[in-house]
Each structure stands twice: as C-alpha cells, then as structure tokens.
Image 1 (cartoon, rainbow, N blue to C red):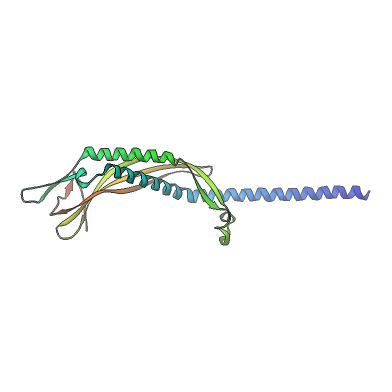
Image 2: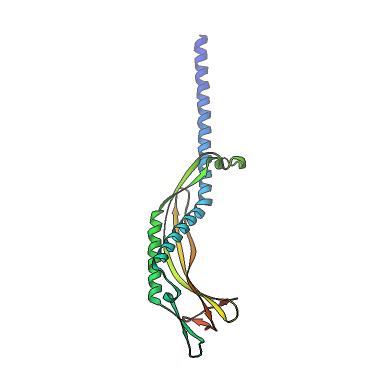
Length: 217
C-alpha cells in the first residue's frame, strides 16, 4: 500500500516539474522572439543601408575606373576673345551614358546581396549590459531589393581670388526594401560620387545649363 501511495506522488511531482520547465521554455522563447523583433527594427535598416552603400561604392568606383572619365569628357569651358568665361557646356550624351551604366551596375550589385544576414551576440538577448557582447552569434536573416536613380549635380566653389573649382558629381538615390519576419520597410538615401573637377581661372557665369548655380564661399 505504501508503494502504491508513493507512485502517484512521484508521478505528480514529475508532472509539475515538466509543466514548470515547459512554461520556462515558452517564456524564454517569447522573450527571445521579442528581443529579435526589437533588434530587427533597430538594426536591419542601418545594416541594410551600410551593405547597400558598400556594394554601390564598389560598383561605381569599378565602373568609373573602367570608363576613365576626365573633366574634359563631361564639360567644356567656352571663353570670349578677352579670355573671360562665356559658358560651361556639358556633354549630354556622355552624361546620359554614365548615368545609365552606373544605374545598371547598381541594380546588378543589389541582386548579389539579396539574401543578407546580420549577427547579434547571444548575450544581447538577455538585456544585461555586462554580458550583452558575450556568447555565440545569433544569425538574423532578411531579404532586400531595391531600385536606383541617378542624377548629375554641378556646383562651384570659391578657391581664392579669381579662381573657382567646378565640381561635377553623380548622385545615386537608392530605394531599398527590406523584408524579414519582424521587419518590413522602405529605406531611401542618397550617395554622391565626384566624377570630375577643374579649377577655373576668371569670372564665371551665374547660370549654368539654364539653372542657377551658387558659388560656395
């Protein structure tokens, strides 16, 4: 009889231990998922922008190196008989080719990093500062895609008495869409690249290509 009484007590004890462990496990998973969601919302936008910018910079620098463009390939300075700057004209065909090739190169690069991942130390999920950077890395995956538009910007910068630096820049606007279980957002940002520059001696026109161009002090 004593053995029969102990057996139900032992079974109930095991049941409550198992139930307690199950609840602890469920709570731990819930906390882990919550932290992962927070990390995704806070870190994925910055991480996606960083890897996109790195890929874009590598692609643009490689393409510009292949094209080997100089200031004279993009713009020409016209002077009057007295040597004063009469106008600054751009080569629209070359500029359109640069924009088209850069945009295509950027699209090709974004395909290569479509499936991306970031790694967060396990300690960061505990919420404890002392061990936030400790433990094995947890992989958080997400997908990204996007589109690119490019434009040419021209600006003039004062370089001393009667001297002006003419900058020709390519500005690439990236619209990146990221998607993961816990995060889904569009990120838009600009990245600019110096295509060419030249020091112009003499007074320059206050208009350029029909648009007002400020001279930076």
